Length: 283
Image 1 (spheres, one colour):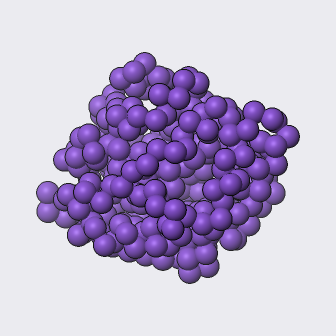
Image 2: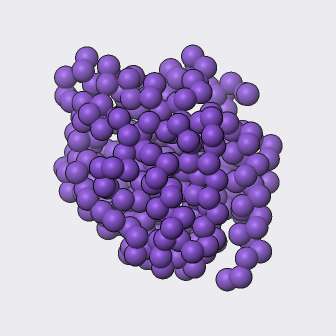
């Protein structure tokens, strides 16, 4: 693996959401390749996709990562409304597709990123998309679909710094059944700590069930889950496979919440194959 500190995008820019929030964007791979838009999870950043953007298996694609509103290098308004209204998250994705001129991108959403994709589907449908990949993703908020990390995530919204750091570190440890190397864990922890506690707190408590949006999908769908996920249980991706009629369902038996980091070579090969197949599927 290349040094993540020296792994630089070939283009960095900002996209302005409909409500004025500035989103930090990074592009990798081949500028004229099929576009892939990656959405990270709660309290993370676009850096979480480093094993994808450095992959030879995906280098022929136009790989777009960005930091969700309130995260990473994106703007961080602190008013709760910026995070509690699905229309705002949907507007972010629509703005990225429009302003970056992404033609039928495959969207890849990890964890909370799955919620953001579903918010987009609720407001815009899937006509502008080439395919959808849900990775240990949230598509419903029933308590029975979640693991043992909810209390830690609440503590990550604490404004007491010591409590916040301890909870964030413990949460990240639970994310990975196959531990990250020390440097990658440090980078992940540092990126997490860029998300203000007010933002983290505002992202919780937003009930939703996206079954109607999943059932209405017409584009190809890939649902991926780590069997040993302690954050979001595999039953969540079972829900995707149940409702999305064109869904392929793949379980990584030895992985936790982040198969794309825990088993990157296998994940990247799976993703590359899905993108190729989606490009030739009926419109």
